[in-house]
Length: 543
Ligand SMILES: NC(=O)C1=CN([C@@H]2O[C@H](COP(=O)(O)OP(=O)(O)OC[C@H]3O[C@@H](n4cnc5c(N)ncnc54)[C@H](OP(=O)(O)O)[C@@H]3O)[C@@H](O)[C@H]2O)C=CC1
Ligand SMILES: CC(=O)C(=O)O
Ligand SMILES: [Mg+2]
Image (cartoon, rainbow, N blue to C red; front, side, top):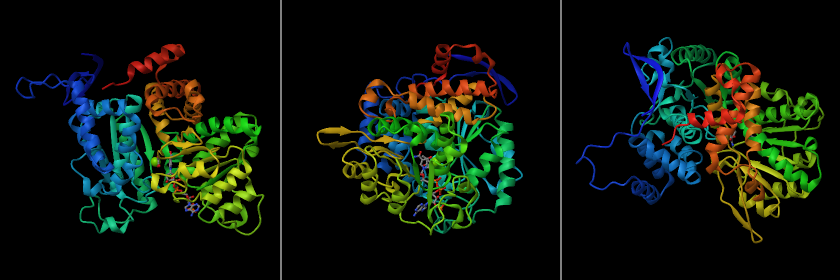
């Protein structure tokens, strides 16, 4: 039994905290006479596979997580590519949409607008206050590309935290899934007797800001070692609350920064392959974003900041980007623009609104096309043909989640580009056979980033999450491809290696935290890289 020598206080009595251990062997007679753990693992897998729908599989796994977390995480780690789509995108999207129907038992912490003024008491009810290290917090206002799901958004916080445990070895009891209930503007939930949130429209900006200030203050007071990941807030609030708290608390926004990091990483690996075919230097790429919300602009910012590392001025880097939103190409003279789009708005186009994606491709001649729009099949056959006509190896990333909202499928992208596409999607697609070869799609999803970024920030005890830490996570991921993965033409590593990848990312993140002076674990400063990696691995919880 490992004893962690940090005293903690519970009911006024000092105790030693005991690291999570498998449950003691059950007393004789209380379990079947022969219950071999290895056979039981196979039994659980067979039970899972016997379910006919993915939602049933999700429900089975939720039960397993509560009843036998060690078995749940063992299955996750041993069958990562099979289980990730069940506990995360795409199935988590269905689970959130039907959260009120499939709800069995409480999980996570709900803080509602009705708790304003007394949030401390609600947070104080969390049973594992001293263990808390990472919280994923959503207000349910933009869950994946599915819109305002109100408290049904709790499913996304739960899913992301399962990946923190599986992918980065965060202790399960150190995670707090949180859904803030600020109302919902989705009428069908307000009318649904099963809906479990308060029955009111979302509160106004001022009331939300007061609530958020109190929430953040109380969270960071109650849990002094906590990292907070904001998830799936609607666009304006995603930017607003990241800016409001990022220099005050250890917080990052997964949709803006995690997505920025994962897409930069995939772009770098894809651009190398594209440049090998076209001869085009990295700094000559032209990147078109279809979708200019929190994720689109987050990725654009991450890319431009990387281009400045390559020696471009900020202005030159900015000019590599074209944004398209629901009104078409984003440009200065088009009319009033949302604040977050202004920086990337083009000042070199003055014509009439350009709304057709084919016209825009013809005008921009992009080497890379990223979809973060929630518009299913927006990258039609014609669009893919156009990308293939101007690029020997077009980079096409339909990143919207879940699968049903992807801008195109891998099969279509392969078919319309003669197999030359460099592809990554937000949710997984199956591999394709093309002219006797197997082609593998990448999964450009922030799930590659946040476990390692969060782990690094926790171990460094970072006071804030700096841009350099996010960038380090991205470059760490880009470097983590093995020779075999390069040989297969992959642009993201295989998800089965997530623990190894997260450890590497965490190391890079800790070093970046140290360079920016936001780390509060001075002991880690004197470790060599090898020692640091060993330390990170030793901190990972294993089922
Ligand atoms: N792969 C990954 O890791 C991640 C994927 N995502 C996915 O990205 C998608 C977008 O997320 P997010 O940026 O936060 O959402 P937002 O709502 O902030 O942004 C959506 C953007 O798409 C634009 N849009 C909507 N309809 C059209 C249209 N018909 N043509 C062109 N553009 C359109 C919107 O335009 P307007 O501004 O005019 O409203 C807006 O700019 C979601 O599906 C989400 O799941 C998000 C984070 C991570
Ligand atoms: C992956 C993710 O964070 C999203 O789709 O919102
Ligand atoms: Mg998200």
